[in-house]
Length: 400
Image (cartoon, rainbow, N blue to C red; front, top):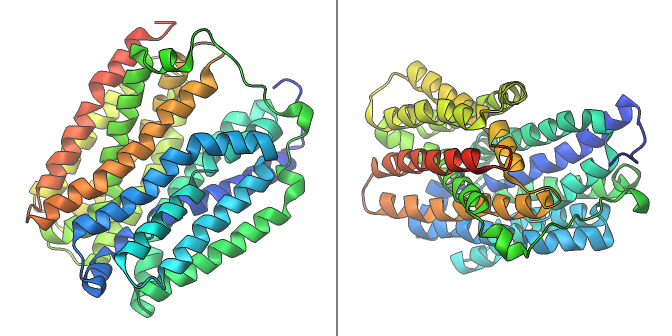
C-alpha cells in the first residue's frame, strides 16, 4: 500500500473515528440480548437453552456470510456495504422489540448476524485503503478498542433501559439509535470511499485455498481462535446470569462487574500492543495471560468473595485476557505464508464466530439443568485448551 498518500493526522483521525464508531455498534449489538435473558425468559416462557440458540443464530449468520460480504465489499465498495450492514443489524434489533414469538426472534437474529458480517471486511478495507501506512497499527488498535467499548456499554445500557421501560422498549430504542448511526455513516462518503487505484490487490499464494487452510499451523490457529472465542463469549455473555448464583450478588451489580471486566479488557488490549511490539515470543505472552485468567475465572465460580474483591478479580481477568489479543493477531500473521495473509486471516477469524456460536447453547444447557458451576469449568477448560494450538503455531511458523 505504498501508493497511499501521506494524509494529515487530522484526516487519519477522522476516518479512524468514523470506522471505530461503526465497529462500536457491531460489538454493542452483540451483547444487547444476554442482559435481557432473565426478563425474556419470563416474558416469552422459554428456557436458557432456547435463548442461547438465539445468539447462535446471530453468530451463524455473521460467520457464514462474512466471506461473501468480503466479495461484495470488493465489488461495490465498503462505503456502500458498511452502512447497509449497520442498517440491517440495527433494524433487526428494533424489530425484535415487536417480535410476538421466539421463532420470529430466531429469524431476526439471523438477519442481524448477516448485517454484522459486513463489519470486518468493510472496516479493514477502509482503514487499509485510506490510512497513512505509518499510522496503520494505531488505527487498527483504535478499531479493536472501540469494539470492546461497545461490549462494555451494552450491558449497563440495556439494564438501565429495561428497568426504566421494559425489554421490548429497550430493544426498540437501541435499534432506532443504530439506524441513525447507519444514516450518518452513509452520509460520510468522502471519508469512506477508496480510490480505485488504491484498493488492495488480492495476493495469491501457492496451492489451493483448501490446502492452505488444512495446513497444520493454519488449522491449529483456527482451533485456537475457536476455543478462545468460546471462553470469552461465555464470560462476557453469562457473567450477569452466573454471578448472582455463585456469589450472591444482585443482577445489577453483576452487570456492573461485566461492564468493568470489558472496559479493563480494552485497556489490556492497548497494553498488550506495546508488549507484542517488543517480543517475538507471542505464545509466551498468551500463556502468561491465559493461565492466570483461567484460575481467576474459576475463582469467580468457586471462591466466595466480597463485592469489592469480586470486582477486582473480574477486572484482573479482563486485563489478562485483553493483553493477549495483540499477540494473538501477531501469531497468526507470522504463520501466514507471504501473499496469502488475507485468506488466512479470513479463515482463522471465522473461528471467532464459531466459538461465539458454541458457547451460548452449551452454557444455557448447563443452567437449565441446574449446573451453576459447570459453566466456569467449561470456560476454564476452553481457555486451557487454547495453549497447545497457540504453542504449535508459534513453533511451526515460517520464521520459527
